[in-house]
Image (cartoon, rainbow, N blue to C red):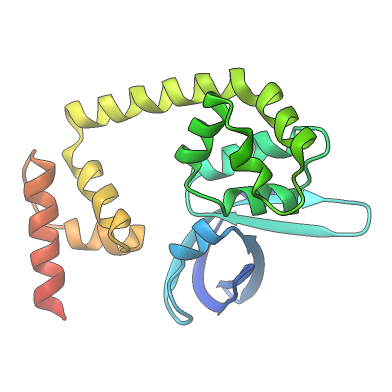
Length: 196
C-alpha cells in the first residue's frame, strides 16, 4: 500500500502529477484543490496517497492533506461513486467546505459536479451525514487544541495557506522562537522576503 509520495515534481497537469521519488516516477491523479498546492516541475513536494486496485488497473490518487484523503475514502464508500467522480467532487472546494455541505444537506453543491445527478447527490448526503458530523466535530477539537498550545503548527498552516509548501514552511520557521502564531508567521514571511 502506498500511503504517501515525496519527491521532485516531473509533470504537473490539470488532472494528474508525476513525482520522482528516488528514481521511480509515480503518476497521481489529483483534484483541482490538491493541484493548487503542487509546485512547478523541478520543485520538491509531498502528497498523501491512496492506491485503488481494479481488475484491469492500479491507480494512485494524490492529496494535499489527510482530510482530503479521508473525504475521498468516504465518497468512494457511497454506492455509485467511483474514484474519478470523487476526485471531481473534491475539485469543487476545500474538504472542509464539502464536509459542511454534506452536514448541511446541500445536494446542489454535489449536483454541480459532472457525473453526479440528483439521486447520487442525495445518496452521498444520506450515507455520509452522520460520518461527516463526527469528522467536523473532531477537526474542530483539533483546531481548538492547536490554538491553545501549538503556535508553530498554526504558523506553518498559515504559510501553507499562503501558498508555501509544507517543507518550505518548516524551513522558514526553523530558528524562530515564540509562542505567538502571528509573530512566528510574520518572522517567517520576513525571512522569506529577505531570501528573495
